[in-house]
Length: 245
Image 1 (tube, rainbow, N blue to C red):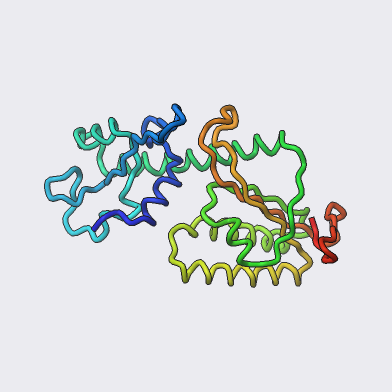
Image 2 (image 1 turned 45 degrees about the vertical axis):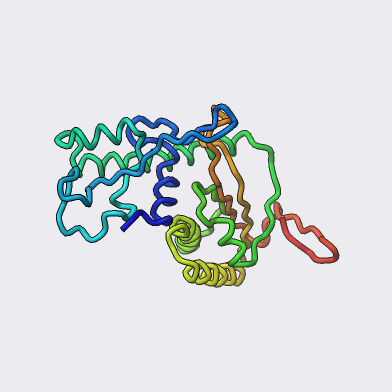
């Protein structure tokens, strides 16, 4: 078997286009004429009997969990120094790197949000529209109105976590599941509406490293949960139809 497009897409997204060991950017276009790729999709456990760290009978050699994204130099290094780069060490490096990418993006989002000008977000009432906003997002900016009690806190926290979870797994599911997820999101939006909440969301590109605006840009989904009586909500008419922002 070969690495599927789904596993490949998830690997590059979770790895942030960086080598898991040296953090070198793997696809660059510094000369602005063409992309230069030094990244390699490496197996933690080789499928070849004489390959590095081979384990006989492993069901999935090409799934995301058995892949780590490295530059060419470090790919060569881990396959030659197998006593140093054991399966356990590589899994630790992989997990640590993916957590680093996620926290780096989150911190960049927070830094950007502190300096950015106020912007209007449109209300989202469609599950399909919300799914398109969170679909394969690399990071999330979320906010909500002050909660009144622990019950409401648990409810809002669960809703926000559901939105993020749907976004995180959206790149790994088939077309049928994407439609199903949009349908489930619609039910959550309807439930929020019944409980007196409105959802505002947007999708945009932001630099991964705030100190370097030319660095790779990543998709960020912004989701706000507001109570209907919130005075910050502005109702605007478009072609005779009222909308909230």
